[in-house]
Length: 120
Image 1 (cartoon, rainbow, N blue to C red):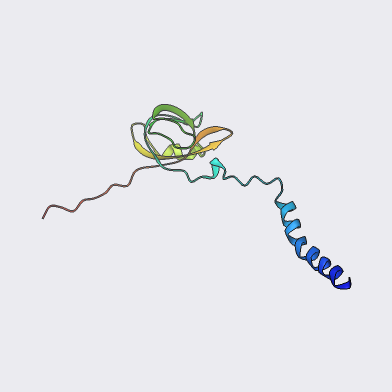
Image 2: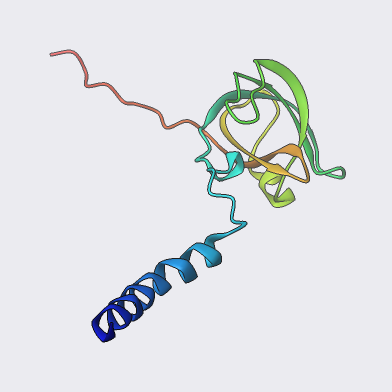
């Protein structure tokens, strides 16, 4: 009988870490969050810049997150200072993030020019 009691005690002690781990993970959302996915650059053309409002109007290609098709639309810009580095009519590569439930321009960059070698 003494051996049976000792066996139960050992089994109970061995199961305790698993029980504690399960309770600490309880209530945690283990699904990947959509807003944490890496943003993809979107080709766009600057149609209008409104520095006072901190907005830029872009004619853009499809935006994967939040799932917008190609269109022309005005967006808030995360950093208003970035508006000083671009001009209307310029083609850019725009990065978007969701801020307060709205798509927001996180960054705009001019596409890198690819220089081809002169013909031989």
